[in-house]
Structures are given as structure tokens and as C-alpha cells.
Image 1: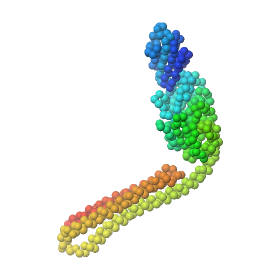
Image 2 (image 1 turned 90 degrees about the vertical axis):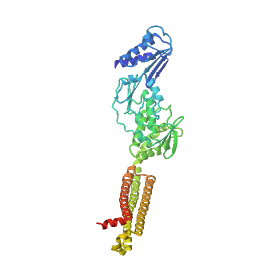
Image 3 (image 1 turned 120 degrees about the vertical axis):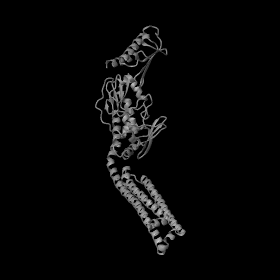
Image 4 (image 1 turned 30 degrees about the horizontal axis):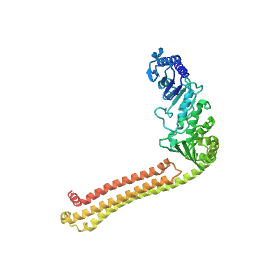
Length: 481
């Protein structure tokens, strides 16, 4: 839009008369010590252009008091200190390149570079900073060629992004699943937020963002990232254990070194990241010299370390494959022993139930039925001796049921917890899905079978106890039919 270009030009004209020019993320502040005719004309022009763009007019202050630009027509405020405060968000919204993005605008490349120097790529953004983990476009007045990545675009005021390559970098969750962060406030290692994959990455305007992106990529290749008073320290656990600064704030990173870091991160997180990272660290921890930062060491030695890791990876995977199959065999043996345990408990419960039923029948039959006189059967059923006997038998059945259930439940629970614990301690090569599919899921089915059998047997015991407790009444009811 021509009006936007005119506004950008008017801001630069005002800058020529200013003593302070603060080009921040969402606000522009311009200050001067002496209000002159040229300054008045620039302020009035900016006010007119913002109204043409349907934007909120900037705040103009003379000697600390807000004034309307119409009042500048007189010479009342000549030679007084002045200030202009302009909220940039409404203007940025008119320069969006994507519908679902954060948009920033900088009136000078110097302001953009100063903003880039203030960014800490590992801290979550504050209220006055954009979240680069979302799609973000930064419009920079004076930029000749754009650059960026899948999420972050840095463009001239009227430029458009070139073809954006597909992002192959790992997600933030994948990185934090591999590395350990140590800081008072939570740290965020999100390589996608600072990924740079297209454009002129060797230009002076790109140098700060290239360094930030390289720092985040390097942090993806450590075992521990620690926040210190001087910045960030990285810990490498390879052939040697190293603790060294992640980067030097004065260090510049070439586009080639940045590309090499991105290639290494993509390869490490493609599959088996623990193994691949260890292979890269084995070589890198040997080559990095004392006093170097990780970023400097990676720029010098990462290409060799990555090539050696790729060459060694196939042999390491073959060794791991043999160990994996051996471990799976042990896992299946453990699963079979656990399955036999639950099956034996179900059989024990069934045999105990049949034993108790048979023992009660045999005890009653051999002890009393042979002596029963049909003429005195009713007197026998009403006798106190029989009542005491059947209650004793019912108590025996209840005690047998409780003891069996409690012992089986306790034994099964302990065996299950011990199995889960030993799985976590001893299984090194099997994945979580293997453990779940090949061990825990079949054992869970066995546990369900055991609990189902205990439920049915418990109901049978309850019926048997109830019948035994009321045996005289049950016999009379049967005789009456």
C-alpha cells in the first residue's frame, strides 16, 4: 500500500531530527531535544498518514504533556523537547503475510538487529515479546531480501516469502524427552521456532537470527542444558564427559555451520535419538578443545563427528538388534511364568471350592445321614446340636473363602508389581510398546480372568455358606415338596 510506504518514509524523516530512536517489538518511541519546523511538519505528516490508514494516531508529547498535532501550527512549542510514541501492532496487522501469524514491523534494520540481540531463545516469551513458536512474520524497512524458515519469516515491507521447505526438525516435546534442562525458570528448546531454511542467510541482517538458531540447534545435541549467571552451560556425555559454555555472545556463526547443525539435529532425531546422539557425542567430546564453546567446537568438528556416527550406526544397530532379540526371549519367559502363576491360582480356587463342597457333603453324609431315623427327622432338624453343627460348617466355609481370596490376591498383586519393576530396571533395548503389547497386555488379561473366577467362586461360596447356615430350613423346604 502506498500509504504504508509513505508512513515508513515519514518515520525515517523524523528520525533524522531525533536524539533517541527506540524501535521495539510493539512500540516506537522517538525523542528530540528541540522542536523545529521540520519536526512539526514530520509529526503532522505522520498523523495524517495514520488516519488515512485508519490507525490510532500516535501520541505526541511536548515537555512531557500530550498535545494534538493541530496545536503545532503555532510557534508556541518551539525549541521544546518532544516525544512521539507509536503503537505498531495495528500497522503490523495491515502487513500480514499469513492469516494465522504474529506480525512485527521494524522501521529500520538497526532496530531489528538490536531486537535480535536482546532475544534469549531458551526463555518463554514475556508479555511484550512475540512467541516465535507460532507462525511469525517480521517486516523490516530497509531490508533488501527476505529469509526465514517454516514458522519465522523476515521480509521487506512489501516482499513475500519464497518457497518454504518442509520442516524436518524435531518438536519441542521430542527434544525435552532427550535432554535435561536445569534452571530456576522453565527453559524451552524449540528448534522449529528459530529454524532458518531459505533466503540469504549470509546477509548482515540475518546474522543475529542465524546465531540464535544455531544456539538452539546446538542445545538439541547435549545431554544437559544449564542456565548460569554467564549464560548457558552444556554437558556432553560421550567418550569423555565435558561441561562447557554453549556459546559466546560475541561469536558469529556462518550459514554453512548453521546448515551443518540443522543436518545433524535432523539425523539424530530421525530415529533412536538416544543411540544417535551418543554416537555423535562420542567423537565430538574428544575433539572439542579446552576453553572452546560448544557452538565453536561444533562449527569446527561436527562434520567429522556426524560422518563417523553415520558410519558406526549400522554396526551399533546390528549389535542392538541381537541384544533386543535376546531380551525379548527373556521377556517372553517372564510372561509365561506370570501366565502360569495366574492359571495355577484359578485352578487352585476351583479345586478348593470342589474340595470344600465335597468335604461338607461327605462329613454330613457319613456322620449323620446313616443314623437319621425317618420318623425322627423333624426332631433332628429342630435339634440344637444340628443347628450348632451347620453353623460351625458355615463358619469353616467362610474362613476358607476369606483365607484363599486374601492370599491369592496378595500374591498376585505382589507378583504383578515386582514384574513391572523388573521390566523397568532390566529391559534396556525393548520399547515401551513392546513391553505393553508383549507382556503387560497378556498379563492384564490373565489378571482379569483371575478376578472373574474369584467373583464367580465367591458367589458360589456365599450361596453354599447361606445354605449350610440354614440347612434345617432348607431340608424342611425340600421335604415339603
